[in-house]
Length: 434
View 1: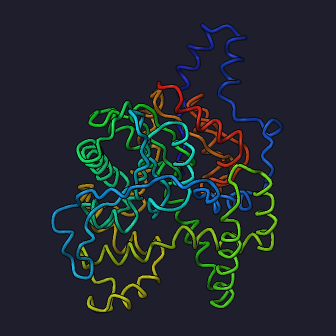
View 2 (view 1 turned 90 degrees about the horizontal axis):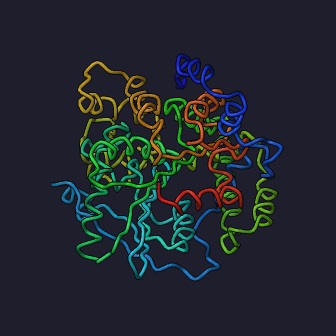
């Protein structure tokens, strides 16, 4: 578990030289948002998290014009059997008709650029006057096929190298083919996309090939192993629930989400009705549903990774695509990481004896915390009750980063982004360049 380091010697010097009243003010600025001051209505982190399920682009407002931009992929990836012609990376562009800032948005594990949280943010920030580019998650099948050198994303330091290259290619195409005029470049990452954004900030600070002005990183997993183990644990609840009940839960949950597709996303009453509808599920059932949502695209990733590097983990012949994809549905994140990822990640890390735990730690926040601390371009928001992170680690991270980090008492995992106080904070971060 990540433990943020403390600089005791520096504190002693500060205590000697700084007046007590100033020390008090500094401590207050570093403290989390107080629970009594934060009026977010949901104290159960699983219920809170469920509200993110309806954070999509708002169907009631005129749809933003969206363009799908095709970014050239890696050599040879366009000709793989059963994947011919799919080797380009696809990003979505929402443009302004004038010079404007450009915001890259990267959501969580396996996400694509067409649906979900990123499209919600696209609407908010396009209204603020920014060009928007939504990137696919490095853990999506499209990124694995078109942009991942290993063909098995999951080792964060190298995934972010691939991401950085893809972003540069995207910018070149936007300027040359689409005549997009860009005044500055920003980045918003959520969940795994936030962790990847943290590593991205280190690379761009060193190389400045893009020159990103401002980063907002929302609910990054502090320890990726901890988060993925939780997800696998909840996914395994399917055995306890049984196939019939598991399927019924998914159908019921999807039906509830779909019934809210025409409702406004800026009305707290909508979320009150939604949480009431989701109140039919027990905590265990919510855990299962959250895990299913996070792992839904894993079979496609397994399938594509084995089309690139056939390691023999799928026993179905390669010419039986449907059956091969069905077999891939039996994989959890741990299976993918151990059977597919680790052999390839060892080569990327030049660490032939590394195990999964050591490789995952290299991709967590702890190894880059010193570079993030003091970088005024980087801002983090998190929730103290996020079940994919350890509460003590979150509090220590807040103490380390000070006013670079906003720690809310409630919200679960990405469950308070619609709440007016959070929404306004997110918008405000990008209104003034660092």
